[in-house]
Length: 101
Image 1: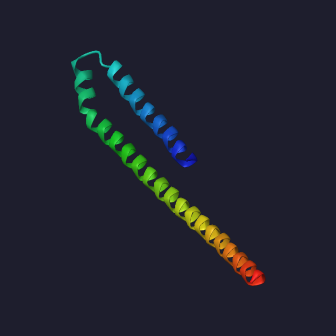
Image 2: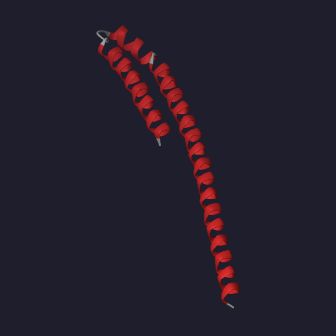
Image 3: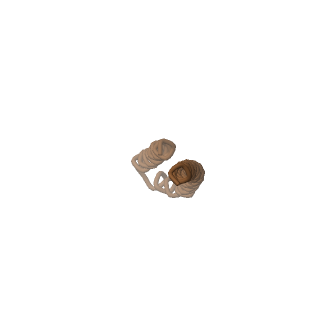
């Protein structure tokens, strides 16, 4: 859970940085040449944003895989403990039955 939260925080920082840079560029447009330059830079903005989304998706996928592996290990450990407890109860019951018989 902590890993996902950290990824989300970094994602928000990255998106905010990209949007602020883009907003500053848009606010710097004062004439037709500036507008033309701004429009030309949009492909760079789209690529940068796409790269960040790709990186974030990869990080979330890795965090999810780690979480699932940890969950599976915890489940297996719980099952093992339940099996051991059940086996101990069976042995206790067998001893009680044999002792009382």
